[in-house]
Length: 238
Image 1: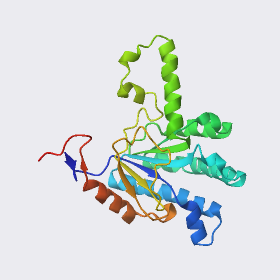
Image 2 (image 1 turned 180 degrees about the horizontal axis):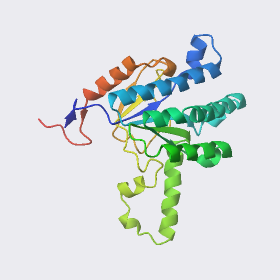
Image 3 (image 1 turned 180 degrees about the vertical axis):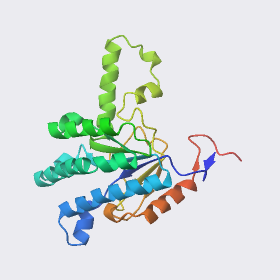
Image 4 (image 1 turned 90 degrees about the horizontal axis):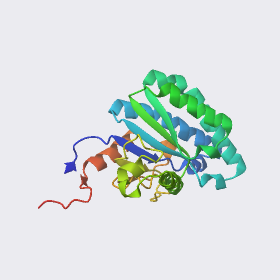
């Protein structure tokens, strides 16, 4: 049994509460999103200092397209600015940048920027920072299932398909499953995030809005994780 042995290797975060943070402080929603993006950068430094290898953040879901056109336009521009601005910092700090999600729904210039960032940072080792953009867990599983169907048409014996094989068809094929999932802002939902990958992840929910989430809050989440028994379906020994 793994109880309190170490920090989690991979933490996934649902970055919730940017808009409510802005409302709380009388700011524009765009300012709340900007504060949230800044906190991703700060938290990346904290992850590196703590030796946490993987950080995956829910930046823009497949459902977020339902928001107002102005907000969606701003969020896309913010993501482009973030990736462009942080390229030098990522290389200096040793951060590998990756993006998961359906890229076909993104603009051509954003897709080019993503490819460039991934290629330029692929040798970085200190932190694997993954952004989920135009991402939905159901959509990811559906896309993987379509890949499987195509391979079956090409002669793949479905009897040989196991969980490991199916996992290799997902966006996260070369990323370990999260050990800990954090959601900010007081909501206690998964919201279609990493549905396959979080099968055995520990969950931690906090009332803090994402831009207010600090190192102390992260420590509380990690402490909660370290005091849980992770049995992965096995029976607790007497």
